[in-house]
Length: 291
Image 1 (cartoon, rainbow, N blue to C red):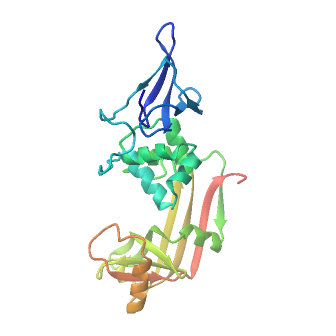
Image 2 (tube, one colour; image 1 turned 90 degrees about the horizontal axis):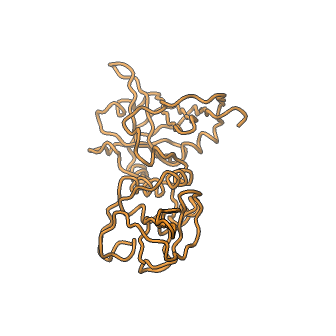
Image 3 (tube, rainbow, N blue to C red; image 1 turned 90 degrees about the vertical axis):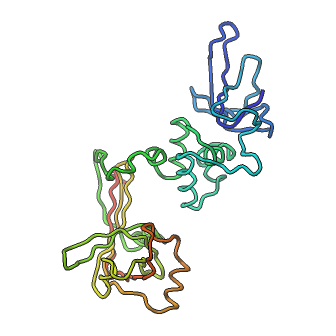
């Protein structure tokens, strides 16, 4: 008997040949795919070490014939599916190792590697555990709602809106992300999304000369960043208000560029750095009452 990560172990009734139990193989103990296996049973979601008997067989799910393990062969470039890419991207964004993520999700690190590196369709229970481990939701891992505006879910039964202090606001701003700046233009107010960095308590972002954000230099603008937990109908927002300045000193430009976590998502030539040093920093969080 040989199996791959993600295969199904089926245990049949000796009398009727009808499956009486099945589960997903989430851990291999031998490189050649021979037993025993770590199996997550579909009826209980428990993971147990299994030495299959004569009434068990492996149902292979979507593997190339002739391979002996779920790991890519030497020189083979993994071709992950969309779910695997989203899991890996979110894990890396949070600075988590596979081992730590697998421990949080109560699964074998080899199985997490399999999900990240190969097209797969993990069951709902697996996605729920991964979403909890990564502090996201199943919909986000599946990519559902990517083209829909956020916040279409129902409000909490007893929501509580509380103000955030400056220290909590700075923590939520973290080191970088995507936020929005609100500026006044001759054509009227404009709100523009930007990739931002937080360096020495200043909010910095790159733009192009002649753009709407560049025109805000020397004026007071607002910067906002937020996060919605669609699954829990909770969220927070932070608002910073302060003067915007173009960063022109070569040493400061080099320092900001060195601190940058990513190039601007919008692409193009955006080498002009702008900086906001907040004079006001406020925030609010929506939670369930009593939290």
